[in-house]
Length: 276
Image (cartoon, rainbow, N blue to C red):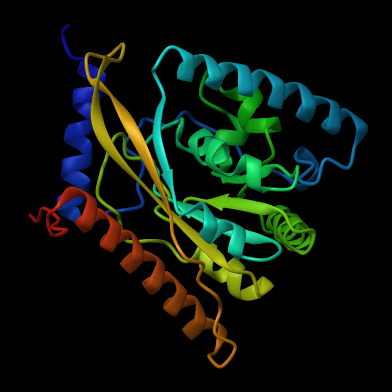
């Protein structure tokens, strides 16, 4: 089967961004969008209409991804370290490397039997909410997503929602690398957001790093479907003896180092980035 020209172009862009160390940028051509205003989003599903849409979206989302699993287009090979998630009390932030539209569902599958009936909330970019890529519009808007916004008033609602969810004992998934790099196996340097929220809310961060291996199944683009192994690592806690900025930097450093350790152990080689 001939390889998809689109996916080959994504791989070329990823290699280019790696050389330039532009770690957080998207490689996809994101559609034009518009600012997310405060009245456009109901973060906590306080409206009846939002709760109904949330229930419907989660049903259809589960059917969509469960079919991918049944068809072996999403393969979760193994989950390691679930005891680390269970050991972190109360509300928590989960970080994960971002390389697939299905990696958030893989995290949900790994955690769902250990969440006391709660759901997984996902922080997403503004454009994925206001102008989501097809066919994921319903999921992006209503499957327990927490969209960021370029508008300060909307971000105040976002921050309030995050605080309420963490106090409630919920789990929030954040991709600290930011942009999705398709099938990229290396851990990337991270943005501050997840760790700033953890420090602000005195919440632990549970790092998850997903490693991959080629399966014998081919996807529709002519590439092997990747088998995911989820490595759930010990929780990282804000240091109350440090200033917020220092505590945030320390958590981010510890998270990145934990990911690198898994990468080097599983793939059996040191982490090396390409350079210009």
